[in-house]
Image (cartoon, rainbow, N blue to C red; front, side, top):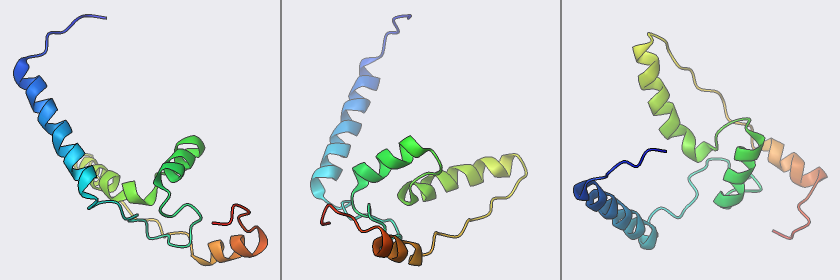
Length: 107
């Protein structure tokens, strides 16, 4: 792989971005799970949720969908297409899961 020289200005900009990310994480402002699926077994367990979505690859976690949706809408405009939202899985599904297959972890 070719060795590319990166300017000091770009490195410093990157350092500033990392500092901002660290401050945002430290603030605790964004620690609440924004997923509307409150009954989901993995609600608030973001690491586990993202891991499952990454492994299963059936769809993107709800918390990431608005960001992705906005980017796709902009791309769709360029291609003169439209996007359409899909309804969420009903909460009753989780009621049923908890009834017939409760989580044995005690959570």
